[in-house]
Image (cartoon, rainbow, N blue to C red):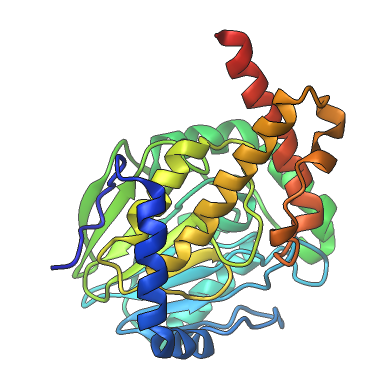
Length: 332
């Protein structure tokens, strides 16, 4: 019997590593197929969606930082076609990307878009919300995601314009969620069954994953990145590792991460291993008395240096993790 999607917070991460490695070796053929079906595509005047399962479409973003060349399209987006309506997963990094999503949906089906879901509050995932709100499409998110958007999105928009350029980015403004949840919740929308899973504070306090029960596809949002260094600025590393452990042993048939290709569930353990190694390296540096300004050099993790954004993001991760380790030490 397959395991449930619900969190399994108390199982040791290392046990899941071992099971995940065995599962990966048994599933090499599937993995090769998934990678070929969901290969990354460049931003070329629109967002290209590919069908990965019955009714499930995904646009794989370039695995890179936001820039004028990609117009901020750096986070995977998706939509799910049900019997009576369509559910959008993410809305893109601007209103033009939200419009591109809506155009892609219309090219596939005449069924109406009945819901858009924000899995977390990142500019590449939510700044297209206004395109959906303009058409009276409700936006669903966790209450903490709404709070984060209200507080941070004005700054996020300014930073995004700086990275992408005002002309390339086009219109982008804050449209907050119109439906809020506080915990894991089952949904029936558009004639399809879903589960929105909240594992507690992970990448952010309100980060959730969307499980499509019909196809077995789990949209993980920023909970999972493939071959890319995650951002831990607002994270709870322990909870996040536990969530990744639960995802690795879940009933999902495949994962759609925020960044990187569609993969099987055990690949979530790669992100968990990075988080564990990051924490261990920073703790060791702190215990040796390494000052914070030198910690990034002392806590290098060269085994991940081939991952996207390592050069810039890992140093920031060390900084924020050092602050948390120091705060924990001072609180003792």
